Image (cartoon, rainbow, N blue to C red; front, side):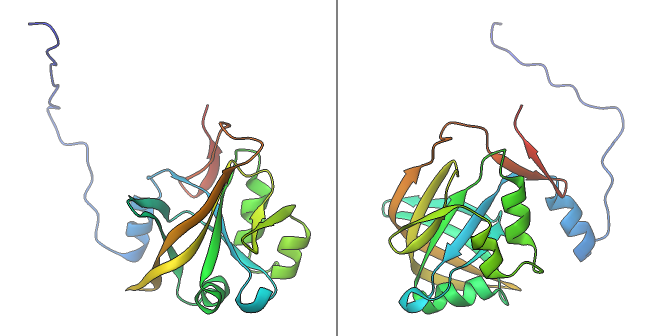
Length: 180
C-alpha cells in the first residue's frame, strides 16, 4: 500500500515523569522554542518610552486582527501599556541578541535601553529599527493570568523591517538561538 506509515513502538518507556513544581514547569517549557520580541510603549501623553523582551507573544485572530501577549504583573512596561492604552511589538532577527538581552535586563534603565537601541516611531510608539517585522496595537482586553496579565490587542499598523524574510531570533532551553 503506497503512502502507508509504519509506527515504531519502543519496547520500554524512555520518558521520565517528574514532580510538578515551578522549576520543573519552567524546565518543561524551556523545551518549547519561541520567537523573541520586544514590546514597547510610550505611555500616556508621549511619556518616556518603556520596553521589555517578551517571548509569550502570538497571533490570536484574523477577524478582527488581534494579537495576544503575556506580561509579568509587576512590569513597568505593562503599567505603561495600561496607562497609555497601546503598544508595539518588534519581532527580533537572529542578529539582535544584544537588543533582547538589553531589554530583558532589569539593571538597564528604560532611558539607556532606548538610547542604545536604534528605533523610530509608528503611531507615536517606539518600534525597533532592524527588526524582522513590527506591529502597533491598542488594547482590546486584559485578563488575569496568575503572576502575568494576558493582553489582547487590535492591530493598527504593521510593517516589515529591512531584514524581512531573514532568520528570527529564537529562545530555547534558556538561551538565544537562530534557525540554521
